[in-house]
Amino acid sequence: MEKKLSIFKEFRESGRNNPKIAFAFLWVSLMPSLGSLIIVPWTLHQSKWISSLDFSIPSAPIAALTISILLMGLAIMPTTLIAGLTGFLLGWKAFPWLVLGYSLATLLGYAWGKGLSGKSLDFLLIKYPRVEKLLDEKKENLGELIFFVRLSPVIPFALSNLFFALLNSGWKKLILFGTLGMLPRTTLVFFSGTLVSDLYSAVKAEGISGKGWIFLCFLLISIWGIFRFFKSKKP
Image 1 (cartoon, rainbow, N blue to C red):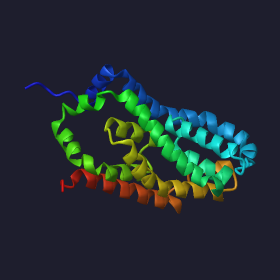
Image 2: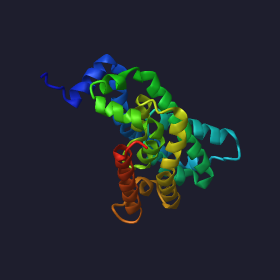
Image 3: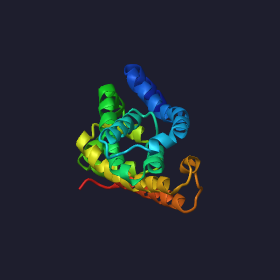
Image 4: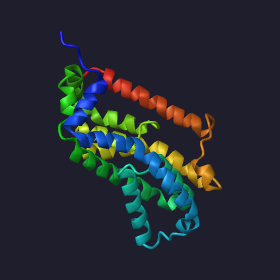
């Protein structure tokens, strides 16, 4: 019996068939950290000017919305960091625009992933028929998986966009359930940003106390939800 390839070799083989996907996985894994190293210091330098933006002038929120869509949708910065900085710099007047930015960034990331993916996931699943069968059985309930993946504070926004594009979840379902899933932790981080007195505090971790326990709760709920999705029987 022929020895099966490891999952790493499978992905590597898939990457050879579609190098764009290999590049995309590297991009969404590395670029948010690199982008933050560049953009956060610039934001610190320009914080007074950004805080003075007048949202009663239509060009201000539209410009902020466009920038946030590009930063999140193209995986240039982590969404959680953007939420904290937005709360600190702009306050609650910017919160509806942030939520809208998440939704449109989801659409951008999904479209980007669909454009790159080709048949990459099909190539992998054909070698794992049990996984393919499970996903096929669950395709009508993907909204549940999207919600719990988005709720997780440790699964990157851009990586999940790429995954759901490969999974062909559908953009409407991804925006609806994805936005609902991200809203609790986004609100928490945004609110934290509105409370702090300086930019360093806005991005500094606080350990497992206070809000840290809430993030841990989100993580445990998301793990339970994802496990439940894959273990529950088809109705």
